[in-house]
Length: 91
Image 1 (cartoon, rainbow, N blue to C red):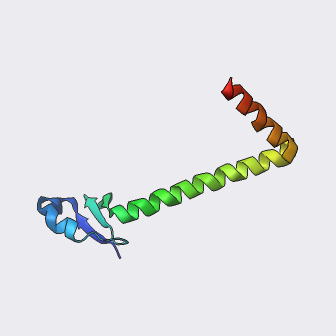
Image 2 (image 1 turned 90 degrees about the horizontal axis):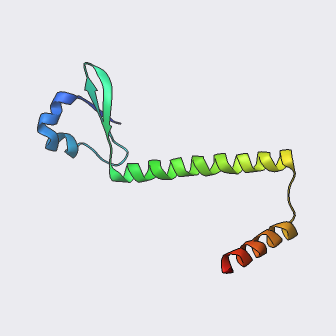
Image 3 (image 1 turned 135 degrees about the vertical axis):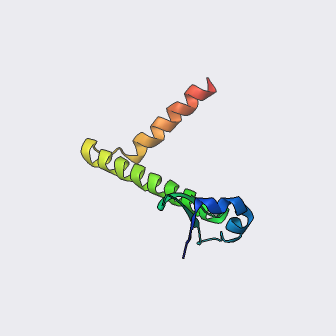
């Protein structure tokens, strides 16, 4: 469960930071409304992985939709494409 505290508690930031744990952020309020959150690095890494996964799934769905709409290419066409790219890179 998160801790909710007024932003004025940051005067004693050490005590506020001691309350932060993985899965237990501290939410700071300003004039009674949520304004900031402080969370652990572990939580930040989890959020980053989740964002990356959502982006990947979105791009995969877009690619699938494109394939369905414009038609799929064969394995041979893919192999030929990369074969030509290698030639271009080698010069």
